Length: 158
Figure 1: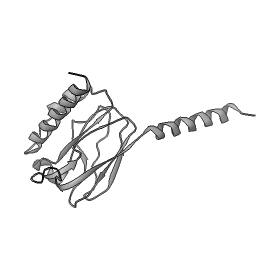
Figure 2 (figure 1 turned 135 degrees about the horizontal axis):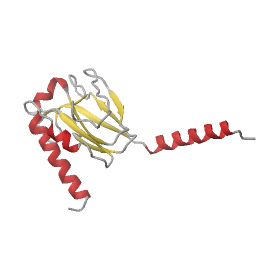
Figure 3 (figure 1 turned 45 degrees about the vertical axis):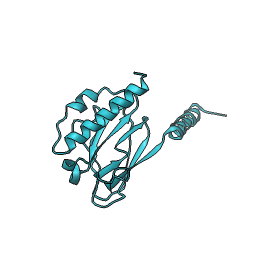
Figure 4 (figure 1 turned 90 degrees about the horizontal axis):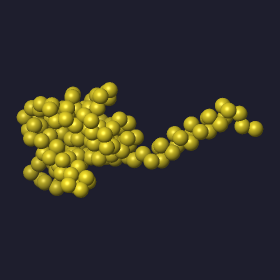
């Protein structure tokens, strides 16, 4: 005999299980140099990542001296910032759709930055573009936004 509490428990368990079955895990490597472009130093690979809500990204300190930190002003509304320790393998589950800008604190001004695009709701894209950046981060984020624009146009058939 199934009680209402038991049915609710089974339903909740199945719902949680189905959500975790669809979620994917991604890795972003923290590198001293770009294997695809040997002249580029201090990079995240990939620097632009498209994922779905519920997916997890693990920042992997492949080379020493790097971390991952959310960039102020480049997160969807209500999302808390993160700041991993240097050389820490750090995972974060992205549950809110939008644009997430991040950086390596020691190498931010050298242009070690990245973007994670979660889902299709890019409501904070315009605000993320307005954020000011120091040093080479300015050019690096500009290039990432150009790449994002190109991929969105291709996806939308423009």
